[in-house]
Image (cartoon, rainbow, N blue to C red; front, side, top):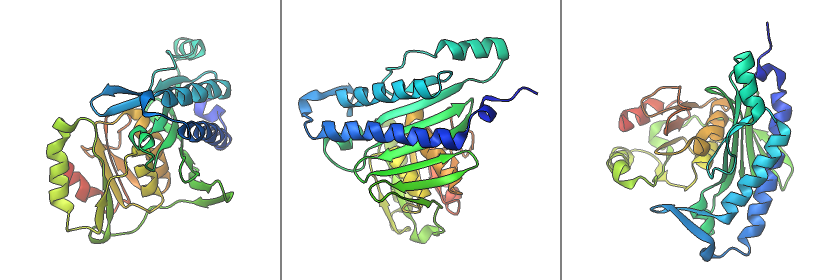
Amino acid sequence: MQATMKEQIDLEKCTLAVCGIARRAGEYIREERKKFSLDSVERKHAHDYVSYVDKGSERLIVSALRELLPEAGFITEEGTAQGDSPSVQHKLRTEGTVPLCWVVDPLDGTTNFIHQYAPYAVSIALLQGRTILLGVVYEICADECFYAWQGGGAYLHHCSMDHTVRLHVSNQPLQDALLCFQLPYNSDAYKPVIQRLINTFYGRVGSIRACGSAAMALCNVAAGRLDGYAEQYIGQWDYMAGALIVMEADGTVTDYAGSPDFTQGNSVVATNGIIQQDLLEAVS
C-alpha cells in the first residue's frame, strides 16, 4: 500500500521546524513594532486592518515553509502565496492523493498590534484534506510558542526561559468558568448572537473576556487559562492551528452547529469538554 503524505512526514520534527519559523516571523514583527506608524495601516473592510508588517511576515513565513515542504500549497490571510506549487498539482493528478496545505495567519490580532495591546501572534497549521496535521502559534508579546502535532500532544515553550510544558485543558464547571467571546468584524450579523451569549452567561459563569486574537483564545483554552471560547465569521487561518492545539490538550472543538468537521467553516466553539454543550445551546 502506498504511504500517505502524513506517513512520509516526521510530524514532530516538522512541527519544531515550524516553531522556529514562527519565532523568526515574530521577531520581525516585534522589531517593526518599535518603529511602526499608524500611517502604515490599510483598511481591508470596516474595522478590519492590515499593514506592511502583516504582508512582510507572511512573505517570510511562506518562503521558509516552501523550503521545508516544497510539495505543500498555501492558504494565507494576505494572499502573498499565489496558488499551489506545481508539485502539489502533479501529485493530485498522478497519485490521487489529498495535497498538503499550509494555513497561515502572519499576524493574528492586527488591531491589537496597531494599538500595542497584547496579545498578537503568528499562526501556522498544516492540513491534509480536512485533517490538521500540526499547529503552531507564537505569541509575540509574551514570547510563548504553543504547538501540537496529530497524536503527539500539545505543548507550550516559554522561549525566554527555554522551558517547555505539556498542555491540558481545565476541569472547571460552568459556574466557575472563564469564557472568551470575541467580536468579529461582521458586526451586523453577529450582534444578535453576542447579545444572546452575554445574556445567557453573564452572571452565571466566573467571568467573560475578549482578547482580540482567535489563535490565542484557542491556545489559552488548551493551557487551561480559559475554559471556553466561541467566535463566528473568522477565517481558516485564524483558528486552524489553535484548534489542533486544543484537541491535543484533550479539549473539544466544533463549529456552531456542533459538528467536529469544522475545518471548512467560519465558526468555532472550543472548551474543556465539560461546558461544550452549554455553549453550543447558546449559539445554536
